[in-house]
Image (cartoon, rainbow, N blue to C red; front, top):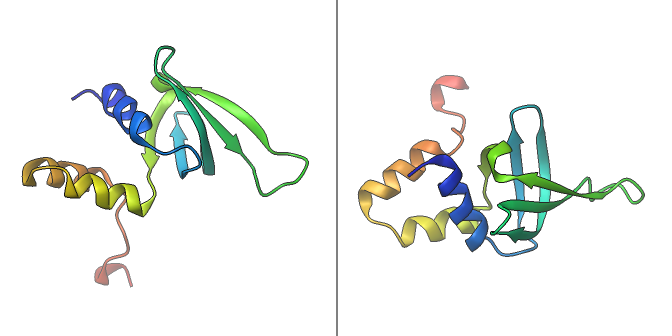
Length: 104
């Protein structure tokens, strides 16, 4: 499955209001809130900087600009429950790595 197609499926199934980190080629938007995904245009609309009362804004991010998405834990667990073992391992391999004992 191509990355753009994968992110299309992810955004289609992600609940509006979900908090994600969106990585593009130029910038990472931390704690972005998905407002909606427009599948025909392949554009996700995210609330950026919601912690700043007068600086938050809605940013449209085209699917082709997304390099990576850090999903909510609940979404990761649901994805693993609804897939076969090979697909689950593939999904796990794309998730950000945590701190290992060697890193401590």
